[in-house]
Image (cartoon, rainbow, N blue to C red; front, side, top):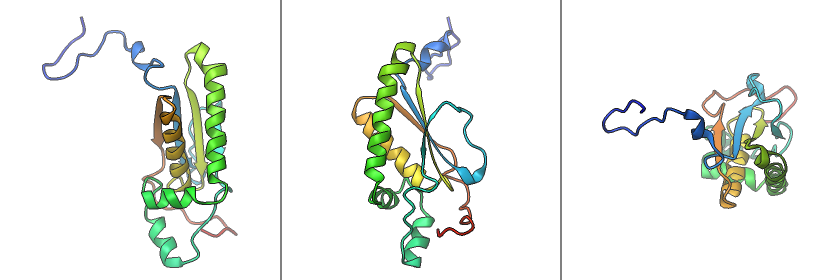
Length: 163
């Protein structure tokens, strides 16, 4: 019998049952390539936004205000998702995840891992990862999301690129 502290749920002796398909089937990790510490899973499906969906507002005041927020903020998420091509990109990623779940992961009891990367890991990757997670969850797919660099400082723009 596992040890139990009154008032807290009991921890089972066999922890392997905690990671079953009944919990998560898809793990989505957003991050910023500019931080140079990508996730370790080299076999993950990658949605690369480093050069995609770059759509900084023309108004410097708006650009500065949005830069201080993250992709979890409704304003930023809507801005990113209204960028031409965003919906197509998310829909295509969701379809690839579904195919992997049915063809590879499900028979083996494996999670599908998705990396969504942009330059800084605070805006585009977070918004797209959140949108992808919501779309998959609406289909009844268990999803876990990690925003790896959301709390990191803003990175300077890369040489030759606008914000």
